[in-house]
Length: 237
Image (cartoon, rainbow, N blue to C red; front, side, top):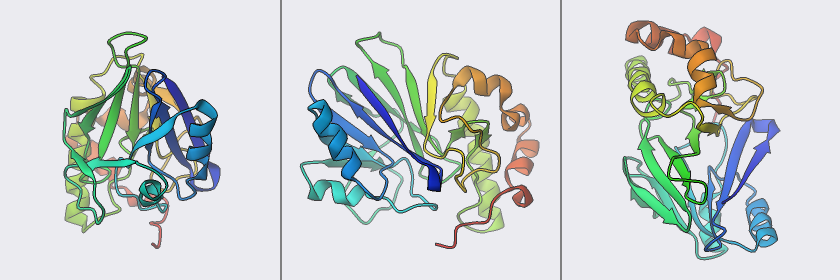
C-alpha cells in the first residue's frame, strides 16, 4: 500500500492519497481545492486515481472533489446520509471498498456533521487487522471535531450527543495501535485545541485526549463540546 498525507498549513487541512501496489488504483480523501498535487503523486507512483471521497461536507475550505472526474475516470464516493448536488456512490455503515490489497471500511461517525463518515483501512499485505483510521473531523489530535457549525442551539446539542455515542461505539473500540489521520489538524477552525502533530493513535488519544476524559458522562461531554467561548469563530462562508 502506498500512503501519503498532504498538509495545507494555511487551513490546517490534511488530505490523503492511498494507492494499491497490486492494482495501481488510488483513492483521494478530503480533496483540497488545487487537485494537481494528487495527479502528480499518481504519475510519480505509476498509479491512477480511481476513487475520491470527502468524509463530510466541509465548512472551513472548498473541496476540489468535483474536478477529479473531469480529469479522468474517477468514481466519487460519499456518505449515504449526505445530500449532495453531484453524483456519488452512497456508502453506509459497514460498507467496504476493495482496492487490491487495500480495504476501506466505512464507519458512520456523526457528530462533527450529521452525515460524517470515517474510513478504516486494512493493508492485507501486512495482515488482516486494520492499520489506520482516516477520521475526518470525528477524532482529532488532542481534540474532537466541533459540533456547532450547523443548525440551532438544539441542533448543536444533538450533534454533540451523536459525537458522544460515535466515539466510544465506533472509534475507541479500535485497537491502541491503529494510527489516526484526521482531516482537521493544527490551524483548523474545526476544533478548539487541536494538537500540533499531524497524526496520532487510538491508544494515545484514549489516554491523553482531555475531551475524551468526560466521555463516560454524556452531559459533561456535551457541555464541553458546546462551550463556544473556547472555539474559534465560525468561518463566514
